[in-house]
Length: 195
Image (cartoon, rainbow, N blue to C red):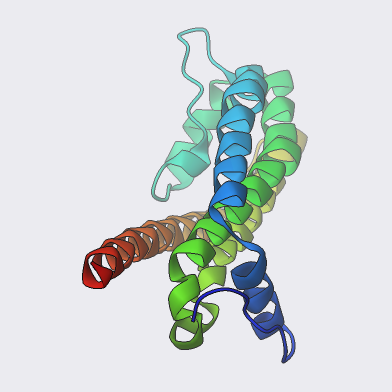
């Protein structure tokens, strides 16, 4: 099904069809450039607010889950200002990053699966699920950081919730990259099949 995709239906299907219709290689490359620029120019700069003197920026969300001990060490090794910078990073800059990488991945999956959009359905929206869990993780970690600043405590149940959000986020990230890989393989297959 090449060319334009008819937008109809409601809700998720309409959003999916919108991305199939308006995504193309130029838009995908543009969003990839925006992603790289934001990562290099904004994210790395904003992360220095909670960087340790040894150069360790490590954000909790970059690991595949964490426990109360990891969070305790993270907060204990940082000043209140650094923890506030971490809260700001998670609730502002990383939220915007989620929008950017979510759109970029959704556009790439839409471009690669456009010829199969009738069969693939809303698979192109899977990257947005990763963004949702990234945001849930960010706000849960922000809550933990604020709790730590107020009374020095860390709730084990909230840590478990944030860790679960983090693991789910990374699982959907892996699924997104698997979809992109499958899309590239299908593109190559179609290229050689036509010849």
